[in-house]
Structures are given as C-alpha cells and as structure tokens.
Figure: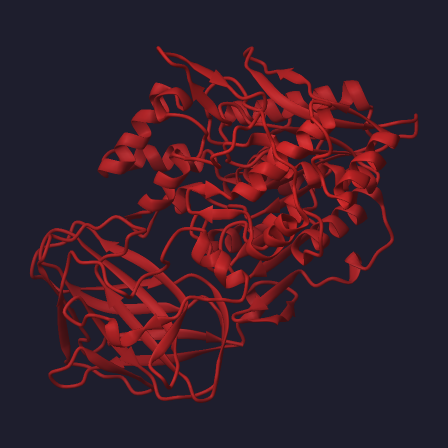
Length: 586
C-alpha cells in the first residue's frame, strides 16, 4: 500500500486549501491510500517539531499551535525497548512544571505512517493539559527496499513483526506505561486509539498486570476480531487483503511465519478453527470480565457501514460492559467521521465529544458528559439527527414482520404483512452485480459521511444473478438489527448468499440501509435448508413515498464465495418456515 508519491523526508509547505480539503474530503484517497494532503501535513508537522524543516511549512494556525505547545512542553522522539528487545518508535510531549498531570498514550493505527498521522491530535491533547506518549505498534510503518537487496525503515517505523494486537502488543502497552511513569510521573493513565490502536488500547487496559489504565477512548474500533474476519461462515476477504497491504512493507517482512501461515489458511479457507482461535485471543469481547472488574471507563465510536470491523460485534461488546461507558454511532465507514478531526484543525464533533469525555473522566473537568445518554445514534442519511438511548437494547421499540412473496414468472417479489408459502425463485451464482455493499472499502463510506451516499440504479440489478422483494411505500424508522429467514437449495455442498436492504425512491434509485452475507456449509446439493441471519445494525429513516427493497444475490467483492461457479441457486418459502424479514423499528 502506498501513502503518497512524496518523499517522506522532503515535505512541502502546507496550504490553507489543503487543510480545507482534508476537513471536507477526509484522509482516504482510496481503499489502500492515505491522501497526499494528509501525508504531507504529517511530514510537515514532524519536520517543524524536530527542527529539520527548511523554512516555514505550516499555515499560521498550525504554526501558532506548535509554538504554543513548545512554550509549555518538551518534545521528544524516543525509542522504547519492549520486553523482548524490539524497539518501538515513539513521540512524546512532556508538559513543563511539577504539577501532576495525566498522560494520554496513543498506539498508532494500522497505517504505514505509524504515529505521525495524528500529530495534530497530540498537540491538541497537550493544550488541554495532558502529557502525551504516542507510539507505533511493533512491525507497523513504512519500510523501503534498498537497491541490491535489503530494506530500511522510516524513523517512525517500529521494529519487529506485526502481532495483530496479540500478547506482545499487550506487553508493549505495559512497557509504554512503564516509560510514561518513569518520564512523566503522571497522575492518571489513559489510552486513546483509532482503528488498530483502539483495539490495542482496550486489550492493554484489560491485561496490564498492575491495572494502571484509568480510561479508554476507542474510535473505529472492534469488539470481536474473529467476527470481523469470519462470520456467518463467510470470510471477509477484501478487508483482510487491505489490512495485510497497509502495514508499510511486504508481507514476508512484516509478519512472522506463523502469522503468514494463518493468512494463507484464511485466504484458502482452510484450518479456519485455528484462525478463529487466534482472532478470539485478540478480541476485547473475550476479556470483558477483566475490563468490568477493573471498572475502566470506555468510550466507543463506530459507523453503521463499517467495512473492516462491522458494528454488530461492537454492540454486543458494549452491551456487556458494566463500566462507565458511551457509544457514538455515525454515518459512514471506518475512520471517516473522526479522521479529519485527528489530523487537521477545525470542528469535528466525533473527536470533540471523545475529548470532552476524556476530559471528564481523566482531567476531572466539570462538563456536560455526566448528562450524556449511553448511546447516541446518527440517523442515515440525515446527519443533523442524532438520537439518545439509555442502552443499545432500547433503540428498537418494535419489530415489523415482512414476508417475502413471489410474483409469477418474475425475479421481483413482494414484501408484505401476510405469510406467503409455496413459491420458488432461482438465479445463477458466480457473478458480481450492481447490488453490492460498497464500491470500495473506506472511500464509499467516506463519501457517505461527506453527505454523498452511493446511489444504486436498481434497473441495472441483473435479475439473472439475484432476486428482489419490494414493500409498499410507507414511512419507516429502521432502528436496530434486521433479521432474514430464507430456505435455500444449494447446487453443491455449500452456498453463499448476500442480503441487502435498500431504500427505494420513486425514481427507481436506491440507497443502502444495511447488508450481510451468509454461507451455508456441510449442505447436500439439491436439499432445501432453512437459514436465518442478522444483517448489520442500522438507524435509517425511510420517507413516506419510498419503499423497502430486499435483494439477495450470491456474490459480493467483499466476501468469500462458496458457491459452485455459474450454478443455479434456489430460494423458497415452505409452509411453516415462510421467508420473512424481521425489521426493527424505533
């Protein structure tokens, strides 16, 4: 994965237009690229802080912020040695004076830029009264090939191989706490992470032998890594491929042999029990007993259309936490809401609320955080609407049962309130269709966050490879986790289905509400089996003149496909197990 075409040792001056573009467009240039603007900004900030900048690289507002922090603190670029000798690249801001201050430790996300991507956040934390210690988790960061063979690491790249939030990363977090206590003498210790750093933050808090973590802020985070990789017997291939390419170097250099074997098994669909066990060890959900016993205040932020760490597993984690907690749910995909707020000045409600929560629980600031609801949900696609709930369970007020019915000789069925039995519909497997979860990881959801959700031309949904069911027009407040029941007759020993729920406008275009795949395994070709599965959670308002459209196909580029190629897959609705969609409403 690339970050930009710029030389990281030669940043150019950052313009006000670039800052404005980052605020409005986000940090992702593509599913596998941090934007050139974000990359250059981080390089310019680091060069200014370490004294290597040739001339002024920053606009006045950032130049003033750097000067403000330098006047009240000491900047450092330490290396921290882990328990096994691996050296971790780090960045520190130590506030001057003897007054006890808390420290915020920030493990970097899964990005080739390591700790440098969020330098603006560290400066902002310092102005609020925190010592700051950021570090790149082991193995993460840019690695450059040398002509003739070999590699050289960027200054922000940590040594060792990526442990994927495993026990070495937990131990590294405790070592970083040791370093902070020795250098800063902090009054409290908080962890704040985005993406990979958020999972590490939760796991360090649960495992630190001395229970020294006082609060966790986890942005674009996960609850169960096993479910993020492999759920409903379906492998999330696109997400894993993107992550494996986003470490900053070749896979052979970035992962040890055991991890490379796990990746190989995952791609091949073999030894998946071992893959799941490996991932469960890295799931915060597996350690809620420890987190709850330590009563660690925990702040979560995630998105409805998250393509790396789907939201349902995080909701389960959140509901089982008994600690002081808060959950924000936003329109968009991974890091789209908070990304600009972590990298560039300007209003950003997701980050502003995370820091206000941190201030209350760590600095002791008297603000309005105690009056916040436990859950705050942004409604698709009306970003001004955010709804309060005392728990996730209270988001759903009732469930509407919509039964799938068939129209004779058509792939386009109905969604209605009366059970419909005895119909069958078939389509061909093995082909991608215009009905899909996203055009591209990260960036489709980033466009959603910016107010431009993807529009689907449903007239282009090729009925040879899918089936649809449409409801009458009615206003609906979708709130919660939909559930679908179908009977499937596979053509082989397994069958993959992907269900999508759309908001269908009068002009025939649609927007996606939610989706989820399901793979039937150990099946018998030609034998009907009734299956049911949850779609991902949603908060979506359907207008009075709009309809719901349910689409089921057999292939999506995000997921593994366990259907025989170009075979016939049959769906049906036997009496007693009629096909239906359980729709949660608010």
